[in-house]
Length: 304
Image (cartoon, rainbow, N blue to C red; front, top):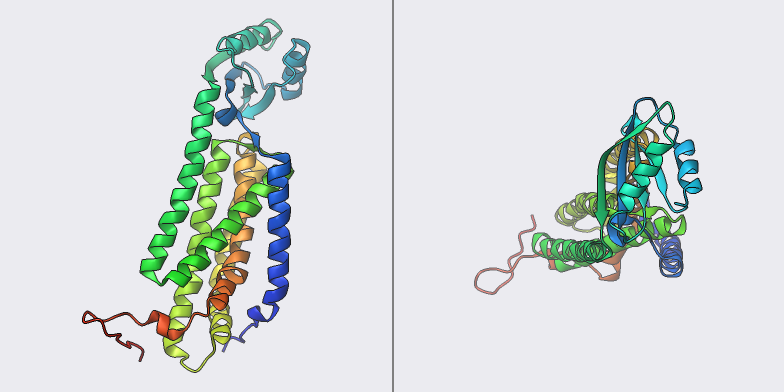
């Protein structure tokens, strides 16, 4: 029989760590702000292809010499493809940069595959819509859990998810990782991953209320978390390995996306144990909360 781990025995220490991480993340978020990418701030994106493998450093230096000091040069797909991102409100900026690079191509000339311009108004709309989408996702999750389990479970899940988002975005803010649409997609994926992990634990807690009728809530949570620990670890480790491979081999374009996922998976695994469960203790969840009402208004005890 698997030995029960006393997870909740250190919940006060975990709470202190949670508060510290959250405060630091919020401080970084509001003090430094997010390093929004061109998707949100507006600017120009130029995709170039070369006949031979392109030297990113050389191209970046050529752009600086041409007066484009804020250009961001990244490898894109094959070694012969480059992606140049530049802030600015001039729709013709992309063509000007492309012409400058073509003139200094030498024995490895560049050809332009595409030039895209995102206006600042469009970028602002994308930022607002992304934030609204995140809030709608959190609201939908709370409604689902309130009906699927009980409203106390919903509160625990939402607090856990908010923690994961704040910590992830706070770390991205501290290191000034470019926050673009791919990173926003990673944050939304984190919400789904963390929720799935939390629901697994919650489902076992609910089941054990019927099996462990004499156990206290803390004992129930310790037993339930221990029973789901192997599944949680297997899922988290396999996911982190896949994300790690993406961080190493995915290139610059996927660095922010994979880093956000990596942080989010770690935060989600932690929060499903030491935040979602602790909220259930604070709200004093008990077996009576899980008794469904009968059609005639009387409660029906469906415990075995």
